[in-house]
Image 1: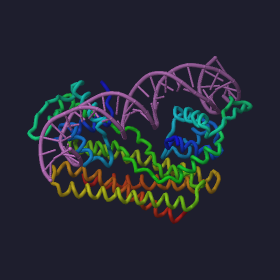
Image 2 (image 1 turned 45 degrees about the vertical axis):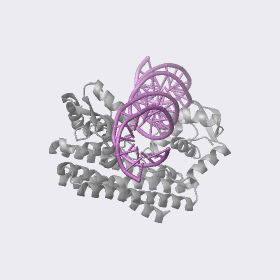
Image 3 (image 1 turned 120 degrees about the vertical axis):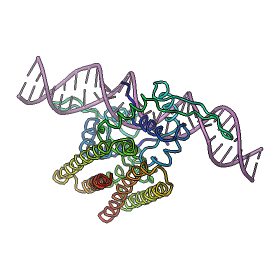
Image 4 (image 1 turned 180 degrees about the vertical axis):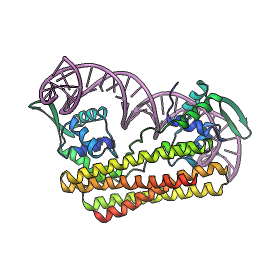
Length: 179
Length: 179
DNA sequence: ACGGTCATGTAACTCGTTACATGATTTC
DNA sequence: GAAATCATGTAACGAGTTACATGACCGT
């Protein structure tokens, strides 16, 4: 069994929706899972190519009126099987999430208090913006009546983002008081 | 001005403490900042080499009784300056933290409910273990009377970990009820 | 003629992990 | 003499971003 990375599985999963071309996949990611899984064109196109080479997807070139040609990808039975296997597999060990703020704060003793305060306030502002982004995507999913059963799970992922971001903002407040 | 990555700054920062050799730096990381910044030997040694080459640190070989020789690194004025500059620099854009759980949950519609429940319970268990690790490190710092003023900032970083992890655990509970 | 969007793709580069190689010394 | 710890290092590999190249079509 060949090994694939999670980004490949993400693309495999997206191909089960109505996204069929590299360009569409990129758009879908930017609108829906950008908050926990970014993928660039530099990864998408080579990955799609590999999916076809290894029999997980078939290509169908389509010409459109008024737009350039596209390559549409369709999952094969093997492709679906491999996606299903991944979904069933238990989670890997949780990765360490690197955090520039914590790294700088860790050396707070070598800084002035003003610097540390600025650092935390800067961070809090950035968190607030992210929180608003989450709310925006959430509203988009709720109104834009996509497939209702898909939407349920998408909203779960946004709730996760909102909750952990809110916790981080509260931490900023508490820490600012305790410096 | 040459550019350095955050891992290099982390090592620069650690060299301001009493850690002087690659081996000691690795131990320090594993005990203190492993929860938000992991670094392997494969990065430490080449980075230290580069620090010396570019005049940010000096090397001093020392022989110890009963132990192999070590190379001790000391920050130069230039090294300290570059660390200070980084500490003052505003934060970069917050990176997207990839999350395998959210990625799988996102495709929850293609899974059975039992599978999704298992996924979330598995995640919650892993979060609990991490939370306990944080508490362990915290207790270690509190008791082990290191430099008290350093400890303050170290505890802040642990508080961050505990709060965001707690929020994630609560999310698991809520989501499990709403599936 | 220009900018925007649609569309596909690659090459160079950075970052990081893993596995390996080496070897001293200490303890059981 | 074997295992554990101390100590330094490199080579191969994988993952991912960025910048670039190319080109069609649309509206103004």
